[in-house]
Amino acid sequence: MIIIFSNSLDVTADYVCARLKSDCVAYVRLNTDELTQEIELLYKNHDFSLCIERQILNPSQVSSVWYRRPQSLKLKSEQVIDKWNEAHTVSEWNASIEGFLSHISSNLWINHPSNNALALSKLEQLNRASKLGLTTPRTIVTQSFDQVFEFWKECNEKLIVKPISHGYIERENPEEDTLIFTNEVTLNHLKENKQILALCPTLFQEKIEKIYDIRVYQTCEVKKL
Image (cartoon, rainbow, N blue to C red; front, side, top):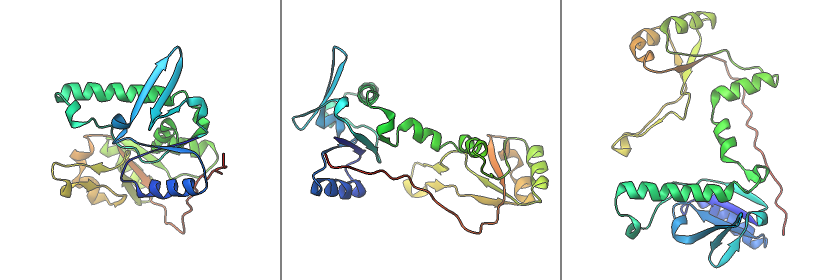
Protein backbone atom coordinates (compact mmCIF):
# COMPACT_ATOMS: atom_id res chain seq x y z
CA MET A 1 0.00 0.00 0.00
CA ILE A 2 1.35 3.43 -1.01
CA ILE A 3 0.58 6.49 1.10
CA ILE A 4 0.57 9.85 -0.66
CA PHE A 5 0.83 12.90 1.59
CA SER A 6 -0.24 16.05 -0.20
CA ASN A 7 -3.06 18.58 -0.30
CA SER A 8 -6.45 18.67 -1.98
CA LEU A 9 -5.33 21.15 -4.69
CA ASP A 10 -2.21 19.27 -5.81
CA VAL A 11 -2.79 18.50 -9.50
CA THR A 12 0.46 16.53 -9.76
CA ALA A 13 -0.79 14.17 -7.06
CA ASP A 14 -4.08 13.97 -8.97
CA TYR A 15 -2.19 12.76 -12.04
CA VAL A 16 -0.11 10.21 -10.13
CA CYS A 17 -3.19 8.85 -8.33
CA ALA A 18 -4.95 8.43 -11.66
CA ARG A 19 -2.01 6.46 -13.02
CA LEU A 20 -1.79 4.29 -9.92
CA LYS A 21 -5.49 3.56 -10.18
CA SER A 22 -5.26 2.66 -13.87
CA ASP A 23 -2.32 0.34 -13.10
CA CYS A 24 -4.23 -1.28 -10.20
CA VAL A 25 -1.65 -0.16 -7.64
CA ALA A 26 -3.07 0.11 -4.11
CA TYR A 27 -2.68 3.57 -2.57
CA VAL A 28 -4.18 5.93 -0.01
CA ARG A 29 -4.05 9.69 -0.50
CA LEU A 30 -3.99 11.80 2.65
CA ASN A 31 -4.66 15.49 2.04
CA THR A 32 -3.38 17.24 5.12
CA ASP A 33 -5.74 20.22 4.70
CA GLU A 34 -8.68 17.78 5.03
CA LEU A 35 -7.10 15.07 7.15
CA THR A 36 -8.78 15.81 10.49
CA GLN A 37 -12.17 15.41 8.80
CA GLU A 38 -11.37 12.14 7.03
CA ILE A 39 -9.43 9.82 9.33
CA GLU A 40 -9.64 8.18 12.72
CA LEU A 41 -6.51 7.10 14.55
CA LEU A 42 -6.23 4.32 17.10
CA TYR A 43 -3.23 3.29 19.20
CA LYS A 44 -3.87 0.36 21.52
CA ASN A 45 -1.58 -2.29 23.04
CA HIS A 46 1.38 -1.03 20.98
CA ASP A 47 -0.57 -1.36 17.73
CA PHE A 48 -1.33 1.61 15.50
CA SER A 49 -4.10 1.86 12.92
CA LEU A 50 -5.58 4.51 10.72
CA CYS A 51 -9.13 4.34 9.43
CA ILE A 52 -10.02 6.21 6.25
CA GLU A 53 -13.11 5.66 4.15
CA ARG A 54 -13.89 2.49 6.16
CA GLN A 55 -10.47 1.09 5.29
CA ILE A 56 -8.11 0.12 8.11
CA LEU A 57 -4.43 0.79 7.47
CA ASN A 58 -1.58 -0.48 9.66
CA PRO A 59 2.05 0.71 9.37
CA SER A 60 3.14 -2.83 8.43
CA GLN A 61 0.94 -2.66 5.31
CA VAL A 62 2.70 0.42 3.93
CA SER A 63 5.11 -0.30 1.07
CA SER A 64 6.13 3.34 0.45
CA VAL A 65 5.29 6.92 1.40
CA TRP A 66 5.36 9.81 -1.06
CA TYR A 67 5.72 12.97 1.01
CA ARG A 68 4.60 15.22 -1.79
CA ARG A 69 3.26 18.63 -0.73
CA PRO A 70 1.47 18.54 2.62
CA GLN A 71 -0.06 21.68 4.11
CA SER A 72 -0.84 22.60 7.70
CA LEU A 73 -3.62 20.60 9.33
CA LYS A 74 -6.99 22.33 9.57
CA LEU A 75 -10.00 21.72 11.80
CA LYS A 76 -13.66 21.89 10.87
CA SER A 77 -15.10 25.31 11.59
CA GLU A 78 -17.49 23.84 14.17
CA GLN A 79 -14.53 22.31 16.03
CA VAL A 80 -12.84 25.67 16.60
CA ILE A 81 -13.60 27.16 20.02
CA ASP A 82 -10.84 29.78 20.15
CA LYS A 83 -7.36 30.12 18.67
CA TRP A 84 -5.61 28.70 21.76
CA ASN A 85 -7.70 25.54 21.85
CA GLU A 86 -7.41 25.27 18.07
CA ALA A 87 -3.62 25.43 18.27
CA HIS A 88 -3.59 22.73 20.99
CA THR A 89 -5.98 20.47 19.06
CA VAL A 90 -3.94 20.77 15.86
CA SER A 91 -0.79 20.03 17.87
CA GLU A 92 -2.39 16.84 19.23
CA TRP A 93 -3.38 15.82 15.70
CA ASN A 94 0.16 16.44 14.44
CA ALA A 95 1.69 14.39 17.24
CA SER A 96 -0.73 11.51 16.63
CA ILE A 97 -0.12 11.40 12.88
CA GLU A 98 3.64 11.67 13.38
CA GLY A 99 3.36 8.76 15.81
CA PHE A 100 1.72 6.63 13.13
CA LEU A 101 4.29 7.63 10.52
CA SER A 102 7.18 6.95 12.89
CA HIS A 103 6.27 3.25 12.68
CA ILE A 104 7.08 3.25 8.94
CA SER A 105 10.74 2.70 8.04
CA SER A 106 12.46 5.83 6.70
CA ASN A 107 13.79 3.67 3.82
CA LEU A 108 10.27 3.58 2.39
CA TRP A 109 9.89 7.36 2.15
CA ILE A 110 10.21 9.81 -0.74
CA ASN A 111 11.38 11.83 1.09
CA HIS A 112 11.39 11.46 4.85
CA PRO A 113 10.84 14.87 6.56
CA SER A 114 14.11 14.58 8.49
CA ASN A 115 15.96 13.96 5.21
CA ASN A 116 14.14 16.92 3.70
CA ALA A 117 15.33 19.07 6.59
CA LEU A 118 18.94 18.05 5.93
CA ALA A 119 18.52 18.67 2.21
CA LEU A 120 17.28 22.19 2.95
CA SER A 121 20.38 23.03 4.98
CA LYS A 122 22.84 24.71 2.63
CA LEU A 123 25.62 24.54 5.20
CA GLU A 124 25.16 20.82 5.89
CA GLN A 125 25.05 20.15 2.15
CA LEU A 126 28.26 22.10 1.58
CA ASN A 127 30.08 20.10 4.24
CA ARG A 128 28.73 16.80 2.93
CA ALA A 129 29.67 17.62 -0.66
CA SER A 130 33.20 18.51 0.43
CA LYS A 131 33.57 15.26 2.41
CA LEU A 132 32.44 13.31 -0.67
CA GLY A 133 35.21 14.88 -2.71
CA LEU A 134 33.16 17.42 -4.66
CA THR A 135 34.56 20.87 -5.35
CA THR A 136 32.50 23.56 -3.66
CA PRO A 137 32.68 27.37 -3.84
CA ARG A 138 34.56 29.13 -1.09
CA THR A 139 31.92 30.16 1.43
CA ILE A 140 31.59 32.36 4.48
CA VAL A 141 28.68 32.96 6.84
CA THR A 142 29.17 35.96 9.06
CA GLN A 143 27.75 39.17 10.53
CA SER A 144 31.09 40.97 10.32
CA PHE A 145 31.75 43.56 7.62
CA ASP A 146 35.50 43.14 8.08
CA GLN A 147 35.26 39.37 7.55
CA VAL A 148 33.22 39.83 4.38
CA PHE A 149 35.55 42.54 3.07
CA GLU A 150 38.59 40.28 3.48
CA PHE A 151 36.68 37.40 1.88
CA TRP A 152 35.69 39.67 -1.04
CA LYS A 153 39.37 40.35 -1.69
CA GLU A 154 40.25 36.62 -1.37
CA CYS A 155 37.66 35.89 -4.07
CA ASN A 156 39.22 38.41 -6.47
CA GLU A 157 36.37 40.84 -5.87
CA LYS A 158 33.83 38.40 -7.30
CA LEU A 159 31.22 37.58 -4.69
CA ILE A 160 27.57 36.55 -4.43
CA VAL A 161 25.10 36.57 -1.55
CA LYS A 162 22.19 34.19 -1.04
CA PRO A 163 19.70 33.28 1.73
CA ILE A 164 20.74 30.60 4.19
CA SER A 165 17.12 29.47 4.48
CA HIS A 166 14.30 29.69 1.92
CA GLY A 167 14.52 33.43 1.23
CA TYR A 168 10.75 33.92 1.14
CA ILE A 169 9.36 36.84 3.15
CA GLU A 170 5.63 36.87 3.84
CA ARG A 171 3.96 40.22 4.40
CA GLU A 172 0.53 41.31 5.60
CA ASN A 173 -0.51 41.91 1.99
CA PRO A 174 0.31 38.73 0.02
CA GLU A 175 0.88 40.81 -3.12
CA GLU A 176 3.85 42.38 -1.35
CA ASP A 177 5.54 39.09 -0.47
CA THR A 178 9.24 39.05 -1.32
CA LEU A 179 11.42 36.29 -2.75
CA ILE A 180 15.18 36.78 -2.28
CA PHE A 181 17.34 35.44 -5.10
CA THR A 182 21.10 34.96 -5.39
CA ASN A 183 22.74 38.31 -6.18
CA GLU A 184 26.22 39.49 -7.08
CA VAL A 185 27.85 41.71 -4.45
CA THR A 186 30.01 44.75 -5.10
CA LEU A 187 32.09 46.70 -2.62
CA ASN A 188 29.52 49.50 -2.74
CA HIS A 189 26.79 47.00 -1.80
CA LEU A 190 28.82 45.91 1.22
CA LYS A 191 29.46 49.48 2.36
CA GLU A 192 25.85 50.55 1.87
CA ASN A 193 24.54 47.59 3.89
CA LYS A 194 27.17 47.51 6.62
CA GLN A 195 24.68 48.13 9.42
CA ILE A 196 22.11 45.68 8.04
CA LEU A 197 24.80 43.01 7.76
CA ALA A 198 25.25 43.07 11.52
CA LEU A 199 21.62 42.08 12.11
CA CYS A 200 21.97 38.38 11.29
CA PRO A 201 24.38 35.83 9.75
CA THR A 202 24.60 36.11 5.96
CA LEU A 203 25.93 33.60 3.42
CA PHE A 204 28.50 34.79 0.87
CA GLN A 205 30.24 32.68 -1.77
CA GLU A 206 32.83 33.26 -4.44
CA LYS A 207 31.15 33.81 -7.78
CA ILE A 208 31.57 30.87 -10.14
CA GLU A 209 31.05 31.56 -13.83
CA LYS A 210 28.62 28.85 -14.92
CA ILE A 211 29.32 26.78 -18.00
CA TYR A 212 26.34 24.48 -17.44
CA ASP A 213 24.49 22.89 -14.53
CA ILE A 214 23.34 19.36 -13.83
CA ARG A 215 20.32 18.45 -11.73
CA VAL A 216 20.08 14.89 -10.45
CA TYR A 217 16.74 13.39 -9.44
CA GLN A 218 16.21 10.20 -7.48
CA THR A 219 13.73 7.80 -9.01
CA CYS A 220 12.19 4.61 -7.75
CA GLU A 221 10.42 1.67 -9.33
CA VAL A 222 6.78 1.15 -8.37
CA LYS A 223 5.73 -2.48 -8.55
CA LYS A 224 2.18 -3.66 -8.87
CA LEU A 225 0.83 -5.37 -5.77
